Figure (cartoon, rainbow, N blue to C red):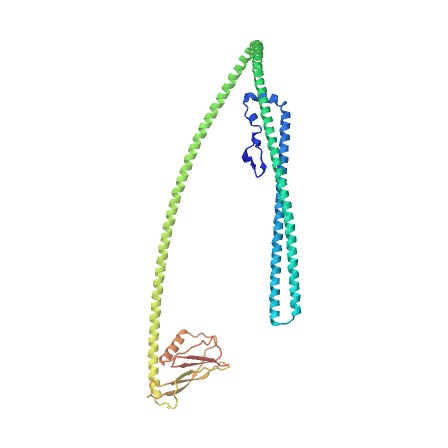
Length: 460
């Protein structure tokens, strides 16, 4: 086994274990037999190799332990450095305290007060300086001692590692030399075994030929005996075979008849299947034709129904339009009649208004309806007060008494009557809100003004 320079890194030695049995692994197939024979002789060499491997593992463990010790020493050195820095920081803090004390002392000296305190502070500062110097010297001495001890220990460990490395190198060289010597002995033994094997092969071939010849003779003898036995059996079996042949022929005829019947049935079944298939195809065609015909008829019926519905809707629209025109014409005629009646009333009012009193100045239209508790006839007065259209004209008032029998509370007030009242009031230049008597039982007062404002109140 060779030791490469790359396998030794930072004091670690790694053995190329893949090369330990390289020569044995590279043996030819013809040498495997010799190798198997020599295995018993090489057990001692293997034990030695295992011992060497154990020693290598021990050396590696020792190297790891030395590395760990070096790490511990480095950690101790770092700790000592931290202690030194801490001491330096302490001295700097004490110096700062001293400077502060000196500043306070100078200020007090300037003021001229408390001279004893100043002397005491000076004494304290001197003591602190002495203590600081003593502590620094002690720390330096301790650090120097520990650094010297660490250096000595590191040198000793380094020397030990070098010695171990040299010893390991020498052992590895010895192990390599022993391995080369053992390999040479193994190669010599393998050559001797190959020669013996060739001799053994020639002897084995001769013995194999003899055994094959004897086997062939025995096989020939057995074949002759088997032939004789078969010949005797043939003489016994020939008549039986003739009888069996006759039986087989009769069975064959029966089977042929059955096969013919089955073929006829199969052909009939195939013909029936073809007929059924044709009928099924015809049924499918008829179903398709009927489906198409029904679909066509349904579409036609839908179209006719849609056309009839459209025609009916148009006719309904026309009828509604005609009825609306007739109703509008009728309403127009009623409005014209109302306008004529209102014009006649206006003429009468204007003629009678000339004889009225000149004291009234407002233009009100008050409609007051009073219902008796016994639902009997009541007197109703309609007072019509109208302002003059111009400032030069004089307003007038007409007081017209009349009797009025109101309808019952559940009576229906027709919209025609409402329209007449609204048209009459609109001719006077005012508007009015009307309420159905069936809806409101109490009496309401409705005031209509010429300024188109509305007000209604309820009499409780």
